[in-house]
Image (cartoon, rainbow, N blue to C red; front, side):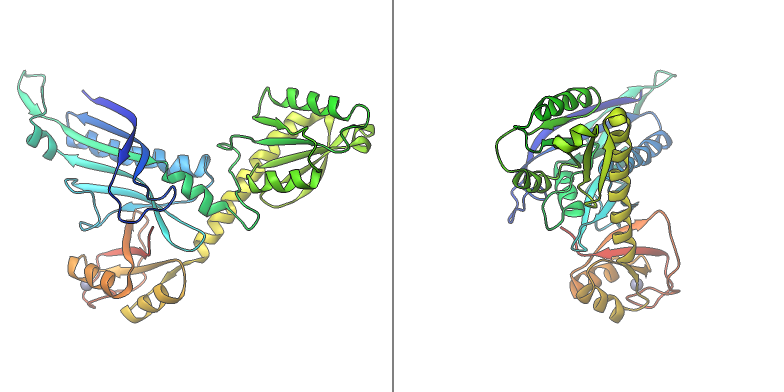
Length: 345
Ligand SMILES: [Zn+2]
């Protein structure tokens, strides 16, 4: 003890309506399970794994998330506690992006999962389970994408840098482009497009495919020992010396990551609003895409009433609590929690 099991598997669910990447009949996910000697250890593991997912979203996908606990009504059936990370898509809707559950010894008692303790006594284990799915690909598309297409965060982009020769028939251009590709390939995932399509066509193509950084190299650049770099996230263009290219590309890719994260963070922060009473909650949900912070008494009846009247669900009770009003947004009784409400995928 403890025991850790992890697997990547495909899952089938008979969804009434499907949506690419977010809700499909068959999808791929990672699920982990642990069994511990004590409840305390299992609780620590449940929270630790939620942090692993939140850090992964921030550090690899450049997506900010809100960490919190699910209400009784929204938690996983059979769990004592369900924790979640909630992300906001570009249209203001929530995407539950990963969950982590503390099971207590409920499943252990149901399935008779026991271990021998130090005194050779049989004890029930305390379990956790947590998962992340290919839905996170949907999150990348819907958080970062723009009118020109995909915008992929550099740390997970299959192609991080595309090299495009300009006037490739001119002496030395293609050779230099190949040399750049081979140099950069030691540290990055690099593609050279030496096809005979027009450069402008290629620019649009790799923008649409979300490649984080484009390097253009023409005869004049060659003479000046430089290339032109274009960031996918901001469209910003700059001239880079070929002498220090790998180091400059590393810095630029980090800047693209940070730029994407900050933009997503700004978009999230600007679309979380407070509501003190049910009318303003309903009004915000109906008219302002985004999340609403409101106080809750803890009664499932209030949660249900808000869900029915507004179409929004309690996304989570954030770990970082605030007091946005003194009383429950629904019934006016004393409030115990601040809840994030929103429409969800
Ligand atoms: Zn209430």
